[in-house]
Image 1 (cartoon, one colour):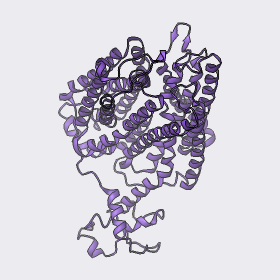
Image 2 (image 1 turned 180 degrees about the vertical axis):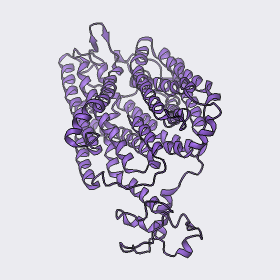
Image 3 (image 1 turned 90 degrees about the horizontal axis):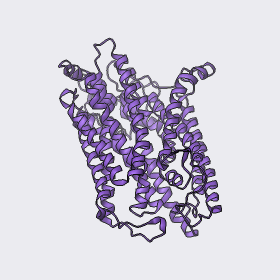
Image 4 (image 1 turned 120 degrees about the vertical axis):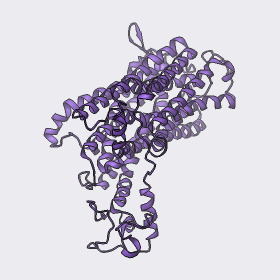
Length: 587
């Protein structure tokens, strides 16, 4: 939807840019908006497991489930934000609302740290003191801050990059393509740097200065994000929303249902409905039932004098039918991304593990427990560059493919790496637990073992590699199988898969906790040394292996990616820019 809006409303953009709006001068207002928002929200999420445990006295499984749900909501709200932006409010208004709502969420979270009555009475968990659970009103206030931040993120994430592209887009400039590429590169670089700052600097402030200062800095950063964006308001290009958002998928389903009594025609049938000049004049044989939606049964009743369908809910074009087929066809492969979404969102437990280990990377450098995730981020970033610039040219010599590995091979490689990541995590936790018991910490959940937290680095690096292969591979695969007008659906599918993955992750933790505590001590007990988080990771490994086998079946059933439909496209230049947008968004 976002990318489609850019293409369809180029004329509107030209009209506005002629009034000396937009351009490089707007970048100091737009890029800091999302960059600072990520510093604030990622910086708060990274260390949140400790806030829930020590300040709200929640059990580790409960706290982890809450964080899974928060992550899930943060992945799902951008889909709604993209819809509102494209079809109703426009990007500027959606980003403005999202920024203000995120600011409100960070302020409420800050208030929970400032005011003692906003959380349970303080107690010392380390001394074994029995602590009171949070009251419903206290928990509701905390959760409302999470919900507001997720809603705000849903307004910023899907719109910010496209809104920046609106400012830079100028087809009349011969250097437009290189300018747009530079914009995308700098935008992505700023986002990467902001996430690294979030999991290092922000976490360090929370650990060293306390929650009041740490959350206050987060709220202050979000306030700066809001101020920066609003200061540039008068200079922005504001492309209006496209309020004629297509209901094509629903029309195809409705038309096929209305014509369900019709028999499918023979292969030489030439009564398919398509618009003049369309390359798609005959539907494919896949999902043939849907072909009934584009059958002309009576030209006099179905078509107007100018050859257009009289009732769009009874007769659709071949293109509309093929678009819905393309979406349905990729759903099995898309579903394999749910499990890797579970793995990629394992943020809470590794943080708790790191908190019980010796965290000095070097003699005088002690890394906060929540900052070890930076190794996954660094691995992903470095690998994308190395793969694109070094390995692709080498691999392509043997595979005879310009991108080295195929899209489906990269998706599969990511799934294999996710299996390895959880297997390594299981072995590291087994060794950490046995070390803790040997050192006399069996009944001390907060005892710090002599084992170095550097043992957690391999699993973070493997997770980063898995995401680099699978996430980008997913988006490129969806993008290659869809027409360019459906490019934003590719991003939405990826976001939806990871969002559902977080929900499944929460469900797995809840079920495992409820079932295993009947056998004695829960595998995901708040006391890591009494629980069996190594078994938890082994369960994830088993599910990941099954998911990989399921992926092989789905990949085989899908067939070759090269047998793609030739879609009607209006503007090749915009298609190239849209591809850059999609790949960068995926990364």
